[in-house]
Length: 352
Image (cartoon, rainbow, N blue to C red; front, side, top):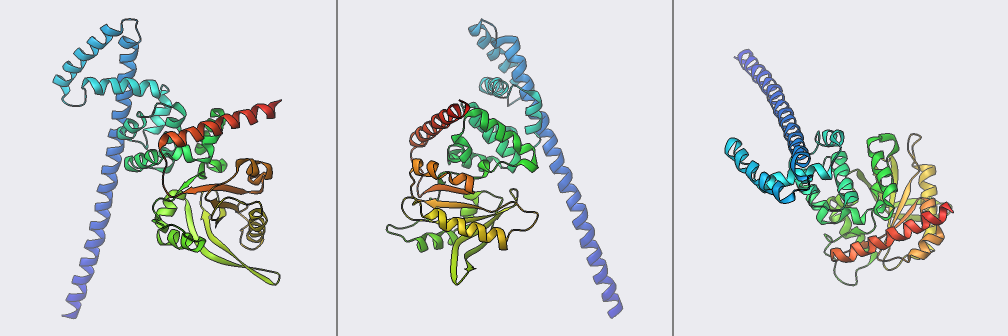
């Protein structure tokens, strides 16, 4: 009797294993089919947009072109059903104009769906659109994540956004080269901590506790490649003990990232403290195959002239503001425009 039960149990285990393997094959096949269909659909929409642009809308007869487009929409809708309305066709034309290089579209569509491109077409600024397209492709963002990143003005808050367009494009191109990942693409200024629900008159300890309580949200704001390692890490240096606030590891950058939390405006004396922590981490924690550690100093405000004079970025110290709520889009865009103009000026002065 016990032998029969044993055989039965063994058969059940074998069946479960077989079912799991077959199920996985079906899931993978369906996923592959969906990706292939999506890529074919996206490329077809791009080709349609190109054909309409060349055949009708690029001519000098704009009104005639619109009439033909309406007629084309009616006929295609009758023949193929939904998806070819007048607004859909004009979106395909816009798609071709926003992404004129076929090879780039072919590469992006391996990861991005048509719904991704529909979101990207809402952006009028070319460099913003390229930033979100490249980041979506590189990071594997869902449409929902892309929409959240755009609504949260990730580009405007990224460290790279403060650079001239030529520099931004060069840094974005590095995403396709894993060994040359740009540090600026993984840092932000400011960081948006609106999920912390902090009350007025909070302390640095309150801020740290709130971040740890909402650690998952904090990592999403930092970036998906940040991995939490420690809080209040003890450093024994000489006869003194020091404690760094938060320690993370960035997988793609292959380096430790320490985060120091400060209330109020950045103060020059913070540099010495953080430099000490960085040197200790490099000596005692950095592995031979890792890059040197960096520091993110989160302050509620900072004086840009002080930061520039101290040349903190050269010492692997990134000073960023943290905001507990997102300001109106116009405010952030004005700040960004000012930062870009200043970056251009510095670049021009450097070339002289």
